[in-house]
Length: 508
Image 1 (cartoon, rainbow, N blue to C red):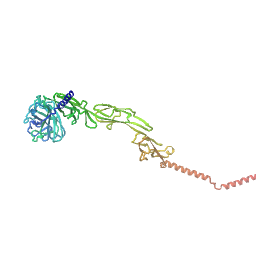
Image 2: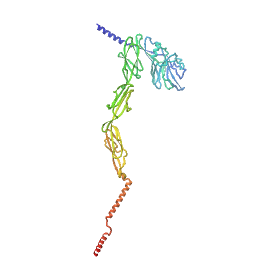
Image 3: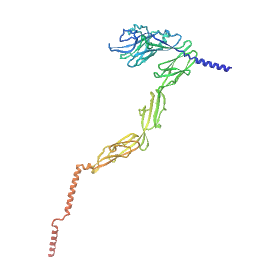
Image 4: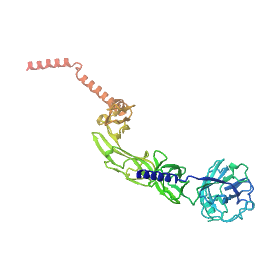
């Protein structure tokens, strides 16, 4: 029996808890009882009976004068039930004439009485220095523009302030062309386009309490879901609040989404996203921005970096390169530190810290380099050195045609570059003094030369020497030939001389 009674009490407590959520909210729409717009260009004119309301900055081309307009508008809030809570009050104007660019307009609570039929720029009443709300009017027509004036409506309903209405003005009143908006006034015949004040009311304050839920840190127009006791209850954003009414003497859990993502690389986190409520209160849930930071290093053992993940905006991250600038891995091959990059944009080679202020991909990498050896048996070469694999290396002989050494060179013999040899990766043409090669590993290229005999024989000095040598050779040849021939009558004289000699000897 006791168990049955206990179970009934538990069911009753659950029922009371669930029904303590007073979702009875009503919406009330009010239309203005007076509206007007003073214009500084025409300071003595009143426009309270026109179907249009202007606000902003403009220029009268006909009269060549600058000026600003302000809107005054008042609603009768005496019809709001006294036994209800004003949760939210939204002023809406329908824009039919748009500025050239979007404009910021602010609302101020009026502090003195005014008459739409006689109010002009010179006699307009005072207004509160602190603005009630601010919003942006887009540069397009046929759109509503809204302001949250809840604080003013609450002040009027509670008697904290007298209801003289509100004033709307440009945030910056200055000499600017085409920077004003035109809205339909209460005199316009179409009700849907007239100014209106939409008020959301909660339950009787004697038996209910209201909780206002707001969010900060989210971008404009980004919302986070609101849950009451684990069940969905609308949404909240940076520019709109959520009001929730509960029965008094009840306790409820109110929460918002812990994470709100706007892209794959940006999200917003609310660390404390749940509260318990039991009385009138206003809570602001704070979101912080988080960015996805990706670290990519090659090879990984050459670096020390944080792990890839989500980091809060403003966080300082430390990165470190542990490897040397160059690391030989094989003969003619090495790893060379190429640098850091941030979102594919080269960063400082000495990068040490990163301030998280946007999504980032941090790359640190080494590239493979190979050595190119350029040689030549003659002259000097250019281009020997280290090159990244896959790159095109260029090389050359300094002088493609040089004078030969020694006597032949003095006689005009020259040697000319013929071609490059030594690798299958040489790019055509290989017969040019300046060559190139695709580097895929260590490589050797060599210059091939040949003797240019034509250059020597085209030298006048060489021709003179050759001619002189030929003449000398001819002369020497002739002399040798003349010596080998007998003199005329020489044999007869010798024989006769011999006979005479014999005779002389006989006589003696």
